[in-house]
Image 1 (cartoon, rainbow, N blue to C red):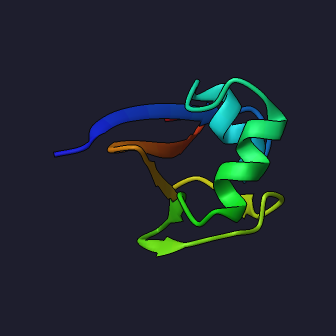
Image 2 (image 1 turned 180 degrees about the vertical axis):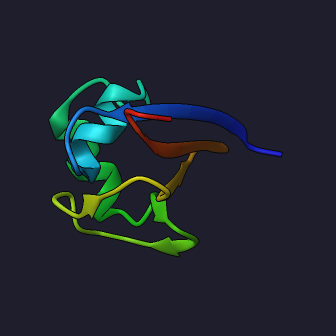
Image 3 (image 1 turned 30 degrees about the vertical axis):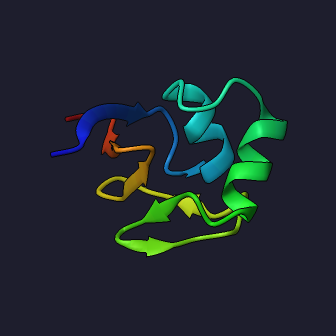
Length: 75
């Protein structure tokens, strides 16, 4: 089973590249861009190659055997 990381949003949404950095799955925006474009990131079970994809509460992002669950600040 994938390691789960929960990230709470301060706003309504967050971009995919920003989320990867916030969850410490990548060390920089440049690394995020490369890994996303290479198809290494799944959003809600499907590969997503858009670094600027908007994520909202309830979305799930998988990379390197780790799952990031996006949650609302009020949770």
